[in-house]
Amino acid sequence: MHYLDQGGPEGPALLLIHGFPFDSSMWEPQISALRDKYRVIAPDLRGHGASSAPEGVYSMELLAEDLRRLLDHLKTKRVILGGLSMGSYIAFAFYRKYAELVRALILADTRPQADTPEGQKAREDLAQLATNEGSRAVAERLLPRLLTEPTREHNNLVVRWVNYMIQNTSIQGLVGALRGMAQRADSTDLLPQISVPTLILVGERDILTPPADAQRMAELIPGARLEIIPEAGHLSNLENPQEFNRILREFLDSLPKP
Image (cartoon, rainbow, N blue to C red; front, side, top):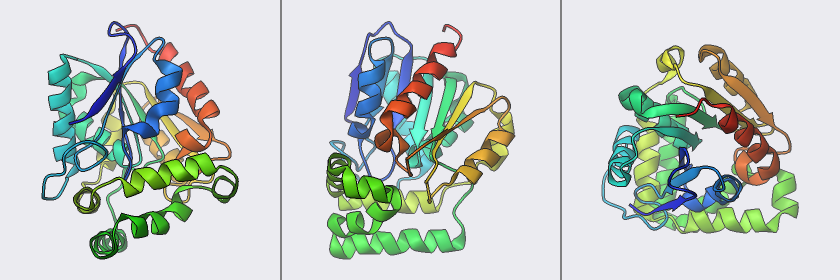
C-alpha cells in the first residue's frame, strides 16, 4: 500500500481516507495546512493511486483491515480518523471493529445508510461502464455530480485534478470499490454508539450526500458537531479548502491531548 506520511512523528496522528475514485493526493490542501502540528497519514486504498489492484470485491471491511495493517506497520496505536464519502464508509467499518484505536472521527460528505436497490444498480451500471469504456467515461459521468457548476466553469485546476485522479484509477480499482460500496452494511445503528468527538462536514451544494443527510447523522451521534461548507459540493475539501481547513483545524486543536 502506498501512503503519504507527513508532519512531525511526535504530533497527534491523523489518518485521512480518500473517497471514490481518487487517491491520497486529494488531501493535499489539508496536509499542507496541518503538517506543522499533526502527523498526517494518507494512504492510497487498494486499486487506487500508486497502490496495487488485486482482483475481487473491495468491501469496506477489507479496506478497513488494510488500514489496520498500515497502522501496525507504522507502529501507530491510536489515530484521529477522517474520511470523505467512501472514506467515511470505511471509517464506519473501522470504528465498528477497532473503536479503541480511534481518538476522534471526521466524517465528510457521506451518509451512514446502505445503498438502496436503485443505488446498487447504479453502481453496477458504472462498473460496467468502467469495464467497457474505461476510466475516461467514468470521469465524464461523475464530474457533474461531484463538483458544483461554478467550480466546473471557473476552477480549471480542481477540475483537472479530479479528472486526473479518476482516470489514474485502475479498472479493477473502480470495479472493486463500486461493488464493495454496493454491498456495504448500513451503519445507522452504529451512530448512537460512537463515543469519541465527531466532526461532520458537508458541502452546502452536495447533491450526492446533501446537508439534510448530514443533519440526521449529526442528530444520532452523541455530541457531534455539524459544519456546512459554503460554495462546495461533494468534494468540499477541494472546492472550499480554506473554510474546510479552518473548521478542521479548530476541531483538531480542541481535542484532548493524547
